[in-house]
Length: 95
Image 1 (spheres, rainbow, N blue to C red):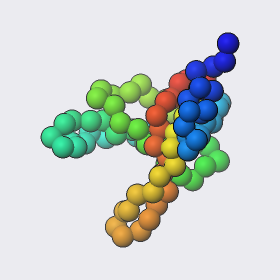
Image 2: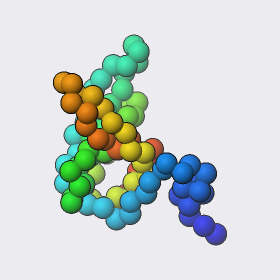
Image 3: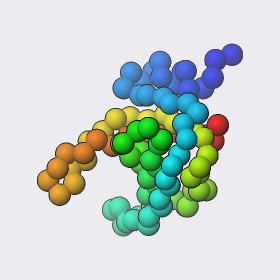
Image 4: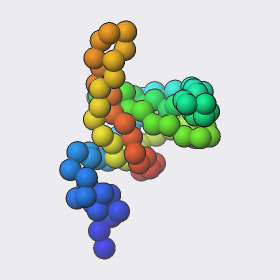
């Protein structure tokens, strides 16, 4: 039986996957989008300069120092007039 991530990658061509990556920083911030409270999580991965971001309704356990498997889409954000690359995480699992 194939892992569930293989099915996701086959059905969504723009989706990417990383396995066994070490998290060097994990920050959680409370934000409000369209009147709904969210917790925005930002991860920095060892050897990668681009932040990985995901939202949750509740705080996520701190994964700093752990190894994780990530499934994500590449995206760009406009911050103070500067285009920055970010990774929007759709699935995260502790390896």
